[in-house]
Each structure stands twice: as C-alpha cells, then as structure tokens.
Length: 634
View 1 (tube, rainbow, N blue to C red):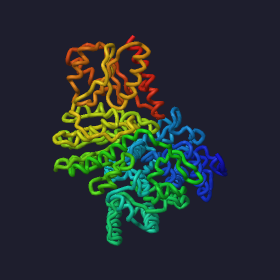
View 2 (view 1 turned 60 degrees about the vertical axis):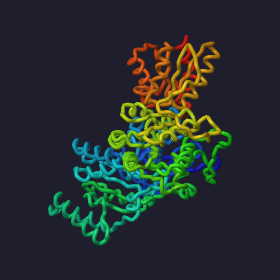
View 3 (view 1 turned 60 degrees about the horizontal axis):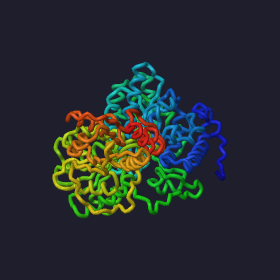
View 4 (view 1 turned 90 degrees about the vertical axis):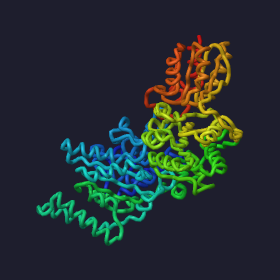
C-alpha cells in the first residue's frame, strides 16, 4: 500500500508490558499509531471499523494502568476491541482477522489469555465482570482488578441493569467503564441515551472526596458502613445542587465523569486514581465513534462495518450489484411498507438494527409506525406482544442469533396468549465472518417445541413476500419467518401478494430413487446438486420444499413416506432438533421406515469464515450435497 505508515512506538509494543515501559507523555503518539494501524488493516481486510477507532485511547490507557492479563478486562461488545487485539500479541496475525482459520472476529478466551470472556452479544459485561470480581475476592486475590467496558448502545440491554442491581448490593471492587458514544450500530435511542448525554458531575469534587475518604479510613474515623451512609448523604446533596438524580450513585455505585475519552493522558491519570478505590464504581466517558477518520466520524452508521475503502480519501469500494437479485433484507423492508400501506394495524419493531434489517425503510415512510427499542431483544418481543394484545400487528425483526435472548418472552408473552406477533428472524443460518456468536443456527430447534407457533422459511424472495402477506392475515397467531443474510435468487422480486396456506409445502419435482426435503433458501443449492446428480447418475430424484417447519405438511409427508425408502433432509440450521429431526419423528410416529440421512449445521459451534467456506466445511454447499446424494443413492 502507498504511504505505508511509519511507527516509532507501536513496532516495539508486542504486549501490554511493553506499553507500560513508556512514559505517559508518549501515550498520545501510541494512540495515533494504533489508530493508523487499524485504518491500514481494515481498509483492505473489512471488519468492524468505527467502534474500534472510538476506543483507541481507552484501550491504551487500560493496558497502561492495569496489569493485564492478571487484571481482567471484559469488553462489551467485542467489536470495540480491535486495538485490544493488536496490543495483546496479535498484531502480526491481525491481517487474518475474520478470515477462515484466522483470528476471531470478537474477543475469545480460546484465542488469548487477554480475552477474558466471550463478547459477541451486547450487555453481558457487568454481570460477567462482577462474577470475576467476586471470584477474585473469594480466592483472596486482593490485588486483582476487574474492569467492564460497556458501550456502543449496550447499556440499553436489560441484562446490564440486572448486573448493576447486583453490583450495588454485592461486596466488590468492580470498575464499570461506560463508553458513551451516543451510538449502537445506528444512533442510540431511548431515555437512557438522553440521560447519559445530560449527566454531569465534578471531577474536582470526586478527587477531593477520594482523598478525604482515604485519610478518614487511615485515621480510623471511617468504616464501610459509615462510608455507605456518607455516600447516600453525599448523593442527596449532589442531587439537590444539580437538580437531577444520578441513577448510578442512587444505587450506591460511585460515579466519575463524564470525561473526554480521547484525552489518553488524563484518562490514564483518572484510572490510576480510582484503581484501588473500594466498592463498585463507574467511569463515564464521552467518545466519538469513528474518531480520527473524518468520514467515519460524520457517518458512523455507514462506517460501522464499511467493507473495503481508500484509507486516504475515504472512498468506499462498493460492488456493482446491477442486475443481481436483491438482499432478503431489502425485500423485507419494501414489502413491509407495501403491507403497512394496505393494513393500518401493521407496525414495525427492531432492537437497534433498523439499517441492518431494512426497518429503516418503514421508519422513513411511516416514522410513527416503526419502533427502534434499542439493544433489548426481550423487550422487543414483549412490547410487540403488548401491541398485539390490543389489536396491532407487529412485525418484530430480530437477528436469529440475538433472538436466543428473548426465548422466555416468546413463550410467556406471545405464544401462551396466542398473540399475532410476526417474528422475522433475519441472519438465519450460517452468517459468515462474524462467527459462532452470530450464526443463526439454533432458531428452528429451539422454537419448534413451542405450542401455537407457525414456523416458516421462504426458498426465495417471492416466497418471503407471500409469507409476510400470509402472516398478517386475520387469526394467524404468532408467526415466525426465518431467512438468511444476503441475496436471494430472483432478480424480478416484486411478485403479487398471495396467501400461502399455513402448513402447506410443495413438490418442486417428482422422482423415484430418492426424496430430498429442504426448507428455506438452501433449497436452491439443493436443486442444483439434484440436477447434477440426475445427469451424472441417470437417477430420478424428487425434491420437496417443506416451507413450514410447524405445522408440518402431513399430507406431503405421508406421500413421501409411502413412496420413498430413501429420504435426504437439508437445512441451514443445527442438525440436532431441527427440520430433519421433525421428519424423523413424523416417520417414526406413522410407522414409516425409510433410510433417512440429514444435512445441516453439525452439533458444534462453527468457526468464522466466508459463508461459502463454512457451507463447504459443513458439507452444505453444492458439492457437499452432491457427494451425499451419490453416496446415498448408489
């Protein structure tokens, strides 16, 4: 690459212990070089960009002040941690980030001792770090410090508040750092965002209070119970003076800030000053997502994961998609608007993913009928249930992997009451470079046992539109539609909106030697493999698109059971408990005895890599399916 950056300091930093040898006045230069290294790497090896630029100073200050990896740092969420990876022994390997066989997309204890906890989903840092702090105390490790970094919208998640509540009553010395950049992927929303924006307190006051409390402890005048009473009294005085209540200190969690999260020298001094304070504490930073790269600062949403770009001009290299099939997400977004224009009961709900799932299309057209609830999947489902109870028809769009966190809400607040919530599970199946925390592998298996649910998956864009239309018709109850990330197969996607009878599959082609049953877009891959197998083997293969995992098309399955002694099921979901398992159960219950083999995601956490690489790894690509058919049919 032209204009290759020259690093005076970063080249000598392989691990944090090298960083700690520097003078504090050298830290701004380290930050500049680290930021340039992130830009250099991500311009040609795409990943999560803007969030990691915003935490450069925080990353440097943390590893400078704390004795990592003995001291624990828990990131939340992990796409803020690229600088952390570079400073902790992975700079040489960073060019393999998110690539098949390379370093992982998010911090993972399996990759490095500096990665203390898995952090692909938001809002878990406070709970996990509190557990570590309590464990350290129980083991007598009084010198071990534990820090939770929560940011990029994660504070809106309910688990964060459960952790705060427990931290306020459990003896611990946890430090919570709130990286407040006013962003998740899209702009942060809700009252907490506005509260954090307005929250202020005096640094001079905190420093004076810290020095005074330390002196009173040494003199024996102050003990732990008196300290808590003084905290409550001090909080009351501060609330009166500021004419606002500090929610954190209202929970007896010491609050410091807000401070500039990009002044690395001041940040290091503050961390050093509060490092050994007893009791839980929170440090509130104001940062800028995309800091140091003007296009990312100005358009943080677009630069969350921008793909390849010119590191000098900021020009993004966007592939020409003219003549290609649309993304499933785009079809969802435009179809939702079309349905909402015809049905005034329809509303849209998303937990902080409006641009990713294309809910932003409805937000632009009908802002009063679309709701971004923040990173709060459980709330999104129950909120949808509440609207459905009083006559609305919510389309609740959640990434499949994130839906796992709303499982109880789906059972207790939707299914038991048979409420008409349309749950659109985006990113279903293998998603690629984001890896095991983001693969939508489990939704069919974990939703299938729940009564009252309809579970469907479209084979193409036309089927997606028709399923969305069907789901909003009267008396359909809770209705799940799952579809993958990426493009479909139909360029001319805007078909008429027609009802698909619930539980009705379809026979795509007849055949005598083997029955292949698929569900969802993987049926297109299977169709190509079937065509090749018939040509190469001279056999006749039937292909059925199940469409609905629940209710099953029993008429179709009886036809298959009576006619075929060999059945192959193919699904883009976990093989244990999914569609293949449902077919096995049906055949056993009805005393059919075919030889049945299954293709799907194996019972492992599949690593990261391109979707094509992962399909090949799991034997779910065209070649893998063809090989399985040949083995089975001969």
